Length: 343
Image (cartoon, rainbow, N blue to C red; front, side, top):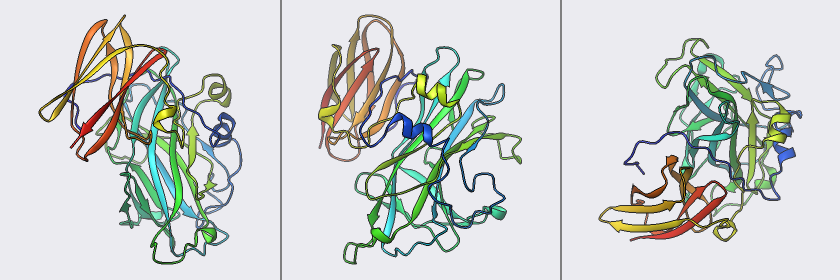
């Protein structure tokens, strides 16, 4: 969904939690040993058995970043033949030196990727078996000496130079049945996932043997299960995460759980192939406008930037898929939502 206005970075401080993801679990994703050893990764690699910290913040003047993840078979064996790995909601946040708050930089339901040699030697890779699922996410497979390495379909994202103090990367994954006409063998599946990220000199800088990019770190490998689970990586100290938690969305939140915490005037008016979103603020504020489906899954951030006191207008293209959607507006300590209908 293309935006019809230019936007600047937004401060996003709302946190959705649920019982399946806790702050201590996130902290453990950079502190604890891997749950299992990824197949084909040499013991000489410093991320083979435990998370590897990287560059806490980007070098001076650098302005781009990208999140990524990787799926491996377990070194102890994987006997599943009809199991796929479903992946969604890869997101990257940065911590601002200016206001000490977390800003959303990337958020993608669908990821891109390929099967790479498990040791990444020679950057050898081949196209992956990618299947688009009903919710817009993808599922895939890996094995036979190849992992699945993935990244946002949108590529790198830009951040303000000399303002970034660290990052937080998160993604969700679960196991699903490959062919529903065949036996479910997910109980035999042994797949591991971790996430990481790279700082980049700019949006267009070519790779130059780590002169134009720097590794943020590699998170803990944990087993993927039948239930949605988040996998995380952060470059700041653990105490920073504990005292100033980054935003992370709930794994199973429904739209009824997205509680409104204040009053903001919001109107959504259809205009040909657009929606005119009108809202009124009592003061200048940082806002985020996001689009959800009826299950509460965030589809896209439509706008995140500063907005002025009084009446504001934003325009967005209609979603391509017919259905009912929720438009939710967040301002400081407030939120309000409205429905849109797409035929």
